[in-house]
Image (cartoon, rainbow, N blue to C red):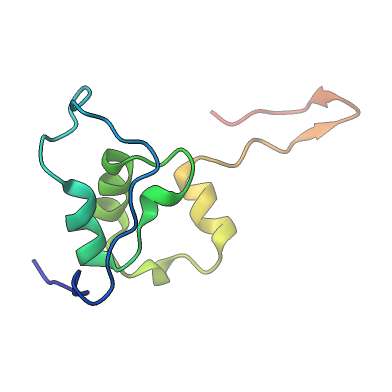
Length: 96
């Protein structure tokens, strides 16, 4: 594992929500710190992204997002973009 950022030089901000006990498949160690150390960005500050979601995205995409030309391509790949084939309030087609 490549360590990209030194935690002692750029400390991690406190988490938004503090949980005392892991939920579901969440690990019982500080995964957030490890993800921050690898990427240099605290993705868990984005609303709706937990440590497991960030781990999955980083494992799928990696640390080099250059394969996505724009943010729109990335959100489409994530499946966050709704089908936009609507005209006059009627759905013309929907994604499979």
